[in-house]
Image 1 (cartoon, helix red, strand yellow):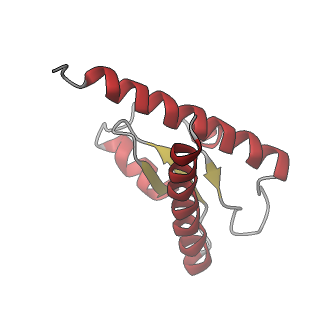
Image 2 (cartoon, helix red, strand yellow):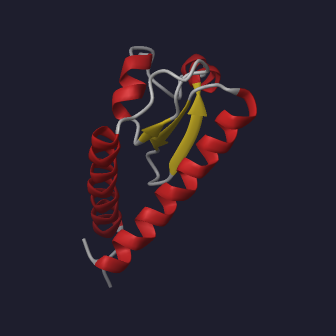
Length: 114
């Protein structure tokens, strides 16, 4: 991944993490930074996750454990447990960079050729 693309991707992730941390500081709920199909990042909590499942935007087979495993970042629980260690956070950031590059390549192949 080129340096500029990686820098822009890191800024997007940092902004989403900041949104999740601010929301967690307001009400103490656990928030997740998740990928979306359109290449954007979504910040959601358990309540919104369940709402999206009810409306069938998310498959009904998806569980909270899948949300934790598939997220690029998550805040601790209200009690302060379940935070990301530095190793896990670095691994999730690397997964995010791979996902961002894959999304860029997919978008490039969908563009019409001139």
